[in-house]
Amino acid sequence: MDKLPNYRTDFRSIRDEISPDEWRARVELAACYRLVDAYGMTDLTYNHITARVPGPGHHILINLYGLLYKEITASSLAKIDLDGNVIWKPDTDYYVNKAGYVIHGCIHRARPDVRAVIHTHTPAGMAVAAMQCGLLPISQTSIRFEGHLGYHDYEGPAVDLGEQARLVRDLGMHNAMILRSHGLLTCGPSIPEAFNTMYQLELACRTQVDAMAARTELVVPSKETLEKTAHLYQPGTRRPYGVLEWPAMLRLLEAEQKNSAFPPYWN
Ligand SMILES: [Zn+2]
Image 1 (tube, protein in one colour):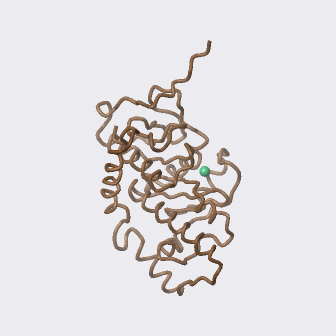
Image 2: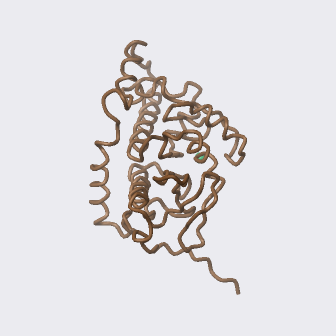
Image 3: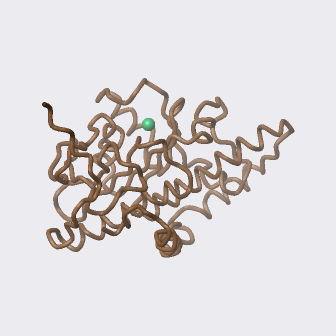
């Protein structure tokens, strides 16, 4: 008789077996998965959020394919190289979705300034990704992306390595991109900043869907106002968005954990 697959989710802590820097990155990334879930941006067990392991090795942390974002813990994350080969993963039959890593791997390779990449399939994100007009500068939240947003045309499920060069080209030096007919992508120099950018992009898309559904003329500020506003929200202009917010995000998770049967993300 075939052995039943090991799909248990009570992963043992590896805190004492790795460097403090890697542990910190794992805890932060696990928190980011929980926040993407808390803000309604998950798609069952699909998609990935990836983060670079601090240090000289070009290694990336990624979720095991098949876990809910609510179940992801620091010790459950797999470590892979830039080609998606597994360096370490927990003792489990859950595996790393190499095809899903196609989108993330090329960005980590091409953009050494990027430490985290988030990709989502939300209804609002997919709705704007289906619109020829793209993201409209109709709210302060969306104006911050004016001139700072890439667009990538759909080529089918991202399993073709040839698409990687076009993903990198279309992202350019932006930290946000709309994958047409597909979803959203953000990245950043840290996990908190990449999360904040995704939160803002998602909110901008939800707002646009609501505004367009109202079927009335929309207001767009002048070109000068758009440029000034987008500039003021760039990370180097006033402050890096996401850093100040992060401890509050962790307090939110900690409070919610008290009523949760799922393992804490910091395990
Ligand atoms: Zn996708």
